[in-house]
Image (tube, rainbow over all chains, first blue to last red; front, side, top):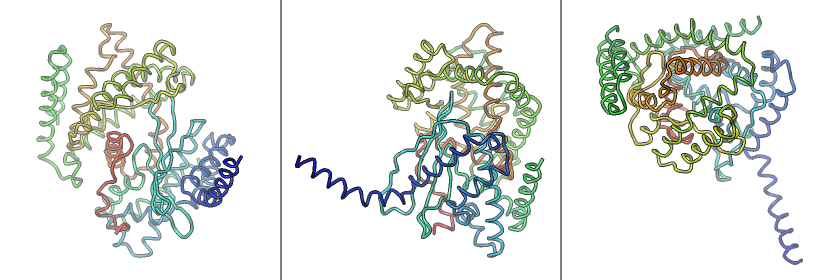
Length: 206
Length: 262
């Protein structure tokens, strides 16, 4: 009886700060959002059919607030970031965000009922930069890993890179961006991004 | 360019004429063919990426593969997906996945990953005898599917990737992975089939099934890339690096020119 009471009070003592920490933990955040979003996708026939307006709406409402696009653009631009004016930086971020949202929405519309596993977070409580790891099971093939690099900001944990099957979304654009900048400067890159986005926008409307 | 293609074709032709005793020699011939490609392409190089000194040659080969894909593979994959029910396609995918599990297991063992290697062998046995080769009941039973090949094994042994190399038909590769592919080819169960019509049917079936499985991914790629060649190259190199470390590569030194982290 005494041991039972002791362990109960111990559990309560431990649970209080634990509950608080869990609410703010990056892996819990990612897991909750993922579950919420795929719950919606699973039930929405329009999204499964590829209704891009509805998917973008979902992504913008549920997922975008947890991404730090400025940081993502900054990493993708590498040394060229500093060479851009604040106005160019703003435009670059906006265009890159549009492109990434499109890619993310495309991928999301393909989701059916694959199982998603979250791996235990390997981080210390004081860490401010962590990687949340998950994997998507699929038939007849190795599971696809999906990792989120996240940083702690005053506004909560924000994603600054995603790795699909070990391929970083942001780093993959680094070389693309630098080759465009070499060819046509920052404005050249901006033009290419804007026309790419317009082209995809037009295609989605058909 | 014609010379390059010829030397590759010759190397492949010779290797297919040889028996198992010529494995080492085949290797050397592949390496020689690859080296020749390097020298020839190196003459006209204006590449800027240190991982891709053969960029002009690779871009030409990439265009060739894209053309082939557009007129042949992609339409075949689309027709296959439109005509064959989901369930059957999954069965076909599982069948080809099952016959490669033994070689995946061998590579895991060669890399010293005994537990993974034994799991692959178990997967093969379970799926062959209880899954009738078309059901993946091993995965349902918790035996994880792995993806290993000889290029990864070489990487694990410490062999560097060498320059990026786009192979005709096979697509993105590196010098190391090209050699790996030659070895994978020797170990491919489909290659061991003596009955030629059966073997050709299996080859074709696998290519079409693989392409059909990639239809969605290739559409996303098409939309995401500014320059598809660069996008594919950089994704491939990152993907291979990640695979060699089984998904946990050490953080890269690319932060060196990353402004945001200083």
